[in-house]
Length: 479
Ligand SMILES: [Zn+2]
Image 1: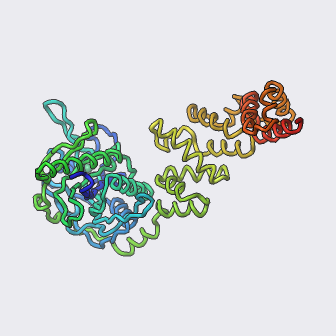
Image 2: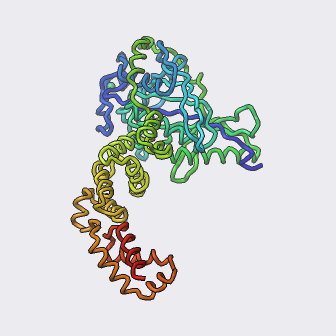
Image 3: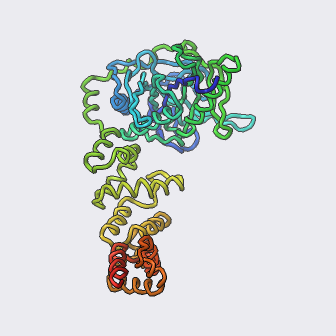
């Protein structure tokens, strides 16, 4: 049987680091990049007798995310101890939420092949992060800076059916987290990590196959590649008559393969029980509603506004609003240039292409939005042609300088002076008697040749509209 006989079932667990200044249960800083074990205290290093105190801001962020993911927010939720031994977990347990999480039963809509697909969210619960083991040959060191950093684990239903859908879902969740200011979404620094649960079954079967869990994937591209690899591996195993083992696997991006890490624990292996050091978390309905009322504009709403307010096609609005930074950038360009469509075109074609080529985020763009708006104004007031503008844009991107300075320095101001253009046209016609004769004899196609020659003679500076007008007059007029 071939791959097309199978269907893949995917669910994601996204761990988002909540943007708080201090940790989940102590006052230590959450700052990334601090010296080893600098951000630690008796609580987050698990010293006997140290007591945890919940961070209100982390709860507030979690409620905000839960609401944006259309979840029910439980007024009472319970912190539980998830018991396991690991060197980077000094207490011997992780504080998490188990049977009574803060947020449940939500959903996110994603667009797949231009169609909306609803992905269910089973739950979103709060938990603390563990520390980090650093391996140096024969010995291992522990850095506990991350220990007890607040996380929200967002668990999806097994509603995803392809690697592309999984990556698209992860992108959508990330966009919402960033819009909310609840998580910075920085995959490289580990503030967002993804575990993927993958299984396959023959099409038409109702029962799910045995699943494996791909752990700690930190890029959208790797989510797609790792799941894709895992689906093929599972199908190949089944076709070869082997059984899929329930296990946790790691993805090696350099080899593009997944490897068995350990057999997958069942929930009962962790011996969850309510943490006696923490009271049940109570979130009053009035507090939840006040957070709901203050939710910022989310990607979906902003997309709709871009379509109505700026008359942008859905395609443009979708791309521009996927990332908050890009949407903010666009709004400045359109305001300063007063040309919504040209702003969208320049960003979606030239700017996004250059950013992609140089592997930069919009926040790292060498061209700021006001400079791009200025370039659009220079085109619209006919100071430069659209063609020259592309060269100026390339210079702006390379040097970070504003367009007016570049235009002035290069002397590329568009020339609309008809006396000057007429001189060039006359020169071109005189220099090409054969083509002139042929054109006048009816070979209309040669017109483009004359435009090209005139533009070339002007060093690209002649106003193309004026060139057309004068060429028609000269070529036809003297027939
Ligand atoms: Zn601490």
